[in-house]
Image (cartoon, rainbow, N blue to C red; front, side):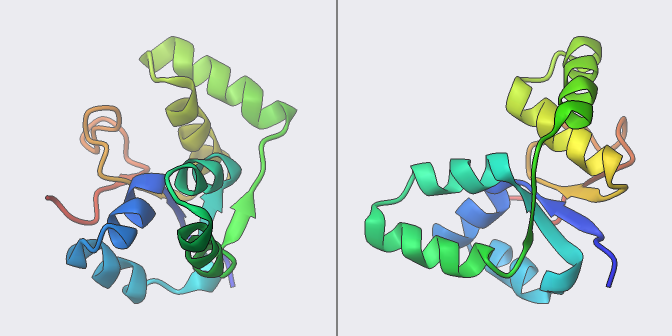
Length: 125
């Protein structure tokens, strides 16, 4: 199956913060068509103690983890210069664009879906 979406860390963090719309959205996804970046993987684990981190890993193991290489780094640098995004956001966008994925996020400040057709805002809080 082909990947369709790249989940931003905020979506998974919302799920672990018991935000029901996030949990419902995640449950609706086909894990075989869903990825997270190595950056999101780290961002998610930073906020948890050891026990909660194991629960997060148990969820994230179902998704493909996209790594950053030279081509992605160069694309992220160009996107950061063009849009002024923070570097982690530029990496997320670079991965989504490189792999032709929809970037699922709640970050409308950084990723206005009216300006960026690859952005999907699955729910509002």
